[in-house]
Amino acid sequence: MTNITDPIYTNEEAARAHFEAIRWPDGRVCPHCGTIGNSTLMQGKTTRAGLYKCKDCRKPFTATMGTVYERSHIPLHKWLLATHLMVSSKKGISAHQLFRMLGFGSYRTAWFMAHRIREAMRSDDVTPMGSGGGTVEVDETFIGRVKGAPKKRAFHHKMKVLALVDRDSGQARTIVIDNVNASTLMPLVVANVAREAKVMTDEHSGYRYVSSVFAAHGTTSHGRGEYVNLEDRSIHSNTVEGYFSIFKRGMKGVYQHCGEQHLHRYLREFDFRYSNRGTLGVSDQERATIAVQGTVGKRLTYARPDRSAAA
Image (spheres, rainbow, N blue to C red):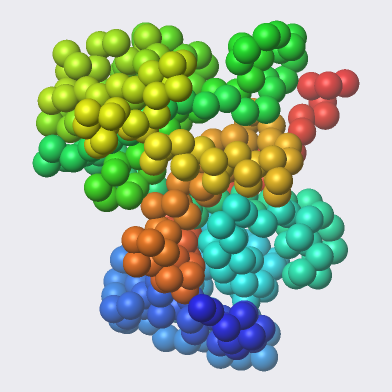
């Protein structure tokens, strides 16, 4: 359990020292020329705190340069606290709650801050799941409503998500998809799952070619009330169903509404927490550190509406 009264969440100098230790564990690195350990802290009455000057390229820099925190007017200790709150809340924390707890001047500030933290949570790992003959569960779900789509029966007007969960490593990977036919599902499964893996799905026809590509394919018929194969209890997709349960409770109970253009970022948030959960031996503090490390090399700027185009 993390102490949220820790100085890194209340004091700017302590927060900066903490962030620098995470970003530069082997010494300060100049983001301009890449020189390690050859910079000096700039001092002066008008010099902002935490500004360094590289002795090689002679350019100034701070620890937040080249991260999602760059050019932010929000104090760093509030960034760290917001990150901790988001990664330690199993089903997420709303922007309104961050707005109230962190004392921002507007809800929009908290909303955009949360999206930048989600960007830091984004994993660039594209390693095929199930390597070494592991088991990967695959399933799709539906949530919300596509803007402008007429309401129909079943799922046609809803947003669609494909999820893959590596049963052995505990990692989750989700993708927003346009439809749930084989021509959409199979290329994504092939691109994200190792050939030697055992793939578990339900009876959906979109997965009918799985057995011809992967080492093994186990199915259960949810339509007949079968959720575990009675002859081989390793054949099921209950793990990925459990992921969807957490995701939907968070989206409906905490966030309540999500536009189609932002769904992929909410998925990255749930992927991150699930893949770094307590049952895998990752504590809240370790999860927060991983998220802070993920801020490096990523930027997310606020896209204002083009009023001239609307005029």
